[in-house]
Image 1 (cartoon, rainbow, N blue to C red):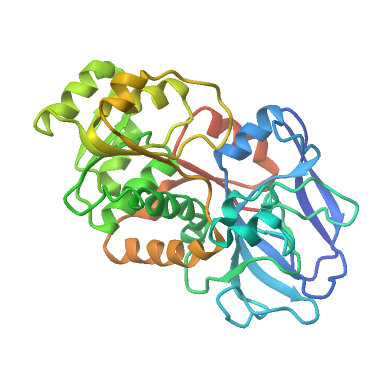
Image 2 (spheres, one colour):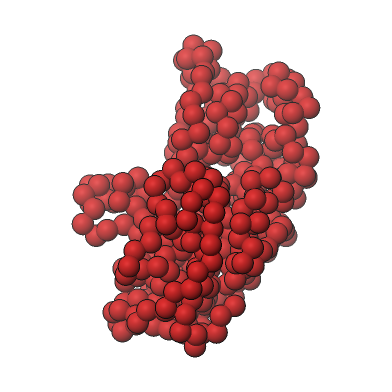
Length: 371
């Protein structure tokens, strides 16, 4: 990791499909309200992998990485307190959340739905520019711009801090699910897809007080992790097939199906399949499609009208949900859920291409880059 006194920073710049090069940039003089952060680690998200593979956002050249954290090494003039009102000082551990322009018309009209604004920004998904090179956490340093949402998280371990951003995704999904009025302590819930988001969804539900959780996935290692996160039952859909999985779910629910389901994969076939697992009058939350991975087909009669399923989508999170996510991580540690175990691999910045390929190969759970 670079010294706080270094005059240059290293950043992993995506230059083309599956081509990242670590380059050096001068550390800029901080403007009013800006913060210089020395990065300590950042998880690889599925969004990073999609951008790495084919640049669907058209951001190249770009420094990726939004599941990051680090320590403040310098402050510009008149830096505001963090988003919860805590004074920020050199040495503090921080994470960042979303950025929404103050003049965003959508957010002015729908202040509690800022996550749906087309102007929503996040560090790690800003294209490179002459004024700002250190835009993502796949770097030795990050410049936090004035007006950003920032949270001081002193006292949390590095792995805990790396998991805050994906935890905010599952906290938001839980809140969306609760709007249906169908989720309670007695609910039997299916979580389909046991990647990092699915596993953290299970942990979030367990911490919320739901104990009858069934995890569905095709990878035995991930199903073992699901048990650690709080799943009572695991079903290997590759072994059982759709019909066998459905039979197992119905067999455990008086022949009805699940009260509620969370779809946490980015696979269109799985998005169609999940409707079969939900009982008549049940609920569904679609969490997995943060990218356009294609269309799927459902039977409007059998899957929707006849069953009167209440379905909601879940899109990222708001900055206001970060304190809840931080509290959730701390609570999970307190009640003995080994949430840190989800970070299974770490790579130095120089090996970021290998880290991406490890993620693509579905090796491990959460892959992290530690400069």
